[in-house]
Image (tube, rainbow, N blue to C red; front, top):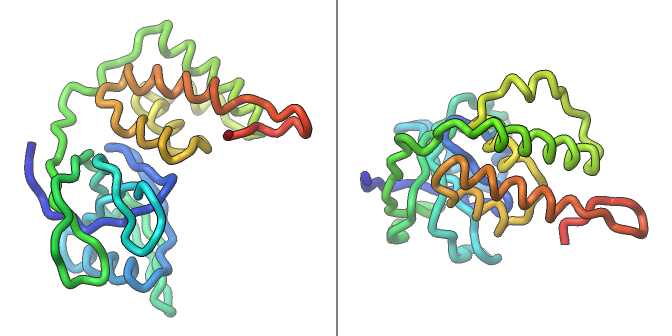
Length: 205
């Protein structure tokens, strides 16, 4: 593993995977400073979930390094950015810094060989559960396009956009290999796809 100092954006419910993209609207002053800092250097920001609330809440141990691919700077100082996921990391220590935003020391994961293709049965089960879950949520999905996605893109896209809670999303991020993450995605769609008997809404509790 490679050690790296990473400026971070702690955001509950938001995860990023290598090879995926994450659009973000940046409006808080300290995170505007974070983006400005990244743009003058290597354009890299670490996405990591907090485990609690408050000004500087504790953090989960695993996040993902992203690089700013697209940026729209607004006149009032806000930004719209798109992050490209590069590499997951494990937090080793929080850095003692004077910047407005938090920074951590982390070990970057070696992602080589972790995305072996799913079996035909695994892929079939994933697509079937995704269709059922999307129907329950009322999502309008272009299934022709979905079936063209490679296994890794499909699994990680569901993991990023599905309305699972923060702990569930963190478990998906920490699932090292693709087949492990696929199994967990299927289980979570089954668990979170229950219907509320009173008004037929999907419940996340």
